[in-house]
Amino acid sequence: MLDRDGDEVALATTLVRYAPNSTFPSHKHDAGEEFLVLEGTFHDDHGAYPTGTYVRNEIGSVHAPSIGHDGCLILVKLRWMTPEDTHIVVPDTAVHTAKDWSSLTTGSNVRLLYQNAATGEHAWFLVLGPGARVESLDGFDGGEEVFVVAGTVTALYASTSTQMLKYSWLRLPPQAIASCDPSKTVFRNTSTEEAHVFIKTGHLRRFVHQ
Image 1 (cartoon, rainbow, N blue to C red):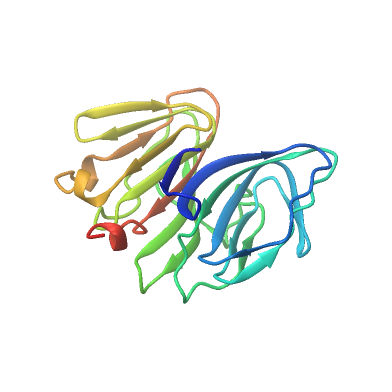
Image 2 (image 1 turned 45 degrees about the horizontal axis):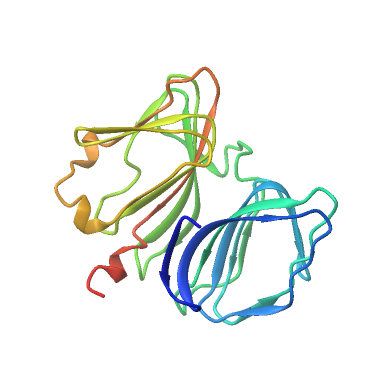
């Protein structure tokens, strides 16, 4: 569990590992669910989602996970949806195609997975080649959340530098970074291997005054 706000029914951000050939009872998402498949293939009654697939199940959606022989690991966020959200499946998040990707700096590319004009929420997939660096992808009005899918990334916020290894997670709420300068907020790959990063921005704005 990376983060939980509530008791039995709660906002949650967590890593879930399914054992090979496991099943989970059919259940309803009263406030939605989104997940990124990190390892293996996630199966449910709607389809099969291999490693690298990003899925958003809207409010009121129902499914029953049924995992295959290879097991599965997902990064999942529960109860973060808004009524205007719809079902979305983005396969192959890290596959580079000119249509889906934008180049930011030398050695770095980004793919926009999702955006919501009403809430300001964005979901991105960032690829950093060895030595590549980029500034913050978005303003800080709605906070930022960072999860390293592969490789090692150094995140620099103001004067604070944090090394993030594979499956590291970082959340910066709006009120905590109001004084940060986005131009001085940097993600840098200091390793010799490609780094993959899942980033969400803007989605924390609606919780600031709750």
